Length: 418
Image (tube, rainbow, N blue to C red):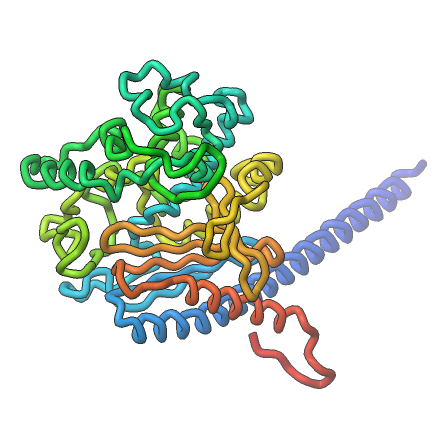
């Protein structure tokens, strides 16, 4: 082959490569442009839903005259929107933000139940074995009603027949003495927390009824601590919060919690606490770990909805773990049913799973709708006249309607604004 022919072939090859590179570049440009357009469209759609939800939140906050109110929703594709109204600290005129935390109360039961189920799948605990296997030698064990017939499942589902220590005189007196004479916020050990449930007649035989009570979850936490040799809170952080990036949820290990809204309650309240739940030094008047494993977390709505999505969509537990938490829920006498750490609600929007939360000065609520894969959460920094369930349903309805409107094609010749 002549030198000229070789040069011609090389030129053709170079040209072909150049055309291929150009076509690849053009294809990449088109892909990037399509991704940019899709991202802008999604952002505009999310912002539009947020504006609608913000109007709902502002109206509810004004109607209830709440100091502050924060809400969040998660869409089926995982995008999260937020809306806030009012103040995290009304006296200092500190506005509420999506990052503001609240004491989440019993919403934390979903985390503790999920931990128990994860440990059961690994064989560390058995949900249906007698808890005497782990704590039967404790000197106080025999003082528990129904002691020998209790299991973790019965505790996690509030079917133990135990009285709730929170409403006992023993708990009230112990907490009051601690507050008055231990200014360094000393903690009451979990075993002493539940003394108010000792030596009492059982409410019913094990598994023969339902009686919601924090004693069940504090006792379940003691069992898990003995079975694993580790704090349930440490394990929840390592298994769920850190891997899922839920930095907005943290164990309330101290009376000083970063980013906490100032909680409010009636001046005259059952626990004789001050009406303002955070003092000028940023300290709570009681140690939040008085909840122990019946709660024990501070959170914001943004990460609560992300937790619900992770739990129900397979990121936190495998499918059989979630099935364990939701199978055979027991009737609760108020139209709801209870699984393991989760209520089942029959709502106008279909079945929802979730939990409410109370801590003096704070209210929380979390719902997940399996049919639409929508999660909603709301939290308020006042514990009275703060029924969040209607708000959660209104937000969920608004989000569902917006998604349906987006999914429906516009009429011919009509334009759609996001």
